[in-house]
Length: 143
Length: 150
Image (tube, rainbow over all chains, first blue to last red; front, top):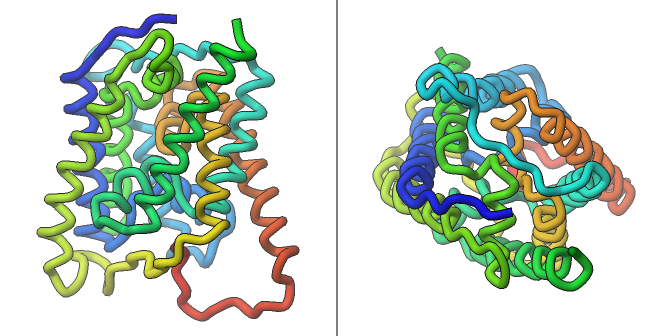
């Protein structure tokens, strides 16, 4: 499935993601990591800690609705993957980000921005295995 | 005040994800499919996010404390160990299979699409499974006071 190359929307969207990361650090002193925020909601360490995470998550989920209000359409989501693969992939992602203590937002954006050696190593690792996985799925085992 | 700011910051993140294409598995998978239908857009997402965060963190972290909370909670771990590398490698495999990562999928829940719900439910199951494994691996260790996860 071909997708349209969107350099300007992607650069602008990326800058807005970065803005959110900077604001969370400036106001709350926290890394904007989707993994850490979700983990903290699932295993609460007290209502005070839980509540800001739940508020961030509520905001994140409202993002597409704000996008809808401004553009008149939901963000494009095309899933070229079967349901069993979504389930397997989701389960594997959950295990990986818990052991690896982060994902594309926590390590990939926030950790790399503060030049954390752990995050740089983590990012290089998952970019590599993602690339290899996509190659294997699409060009070796796939259609 | 604290919850309103957290909500608004989450909203900004969700808007950024919506604009960028990061919530769209077709674009994510095509970014990695250099040998096929390559779409380099996600490089621009990473570039934009990193440039703003790199500059912004340098301004913000000069302050003695954040504006609302008492202190900055920055991961202190420095060791590049098997758990970090193995976990990240496994995450990449899952990301390559499904095309969603946590930061892309959580905002995408707002679209109400069943695929996002299915992925997220499976991801939550994976998080609980991993936490269970970690608990079994070190059952006697007392919880550290005020410890932050790396």
